[in-house]
Image (cartoon, rainbow, N blue to C red; front, side):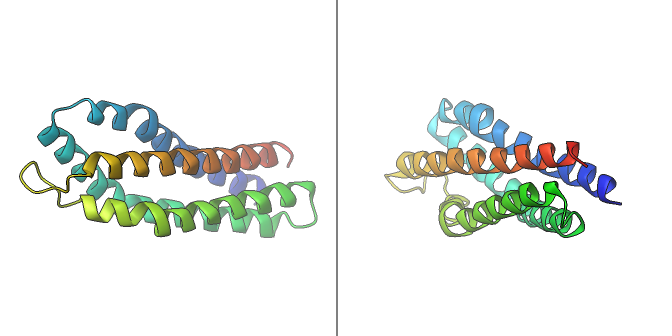
Length: 150
């Protein structure tokens, strides 16, 4: 059971990392280069779409990693899985406290109705997101290494 859980956890967390990496380094840079109306519409639509899926994905990844820690307790992999779970918990806390508030504000912005500092708010979200990507990449790396040691 432990190897199967390790594969499932690695896959789920790896896919999440891939999506968040693409958001940080592909999608958002493209939206920044769009005209104001298109940029606001794209970010709002992306925020709504990702806002529905990512809470489940983040929590699911954390739950799977905690489960991997529990079933591998007493093995060398448990320490790596535990640290990965801690990093994923940090990413959830970061999301809820720092990124989601900006995202929620931006969901209704339009070309006609948006704050003057909308670009600065998006840039702050992006900087925080880069940090979150580093955190989840580190967690994924630990999970992947732990999975190879089973």
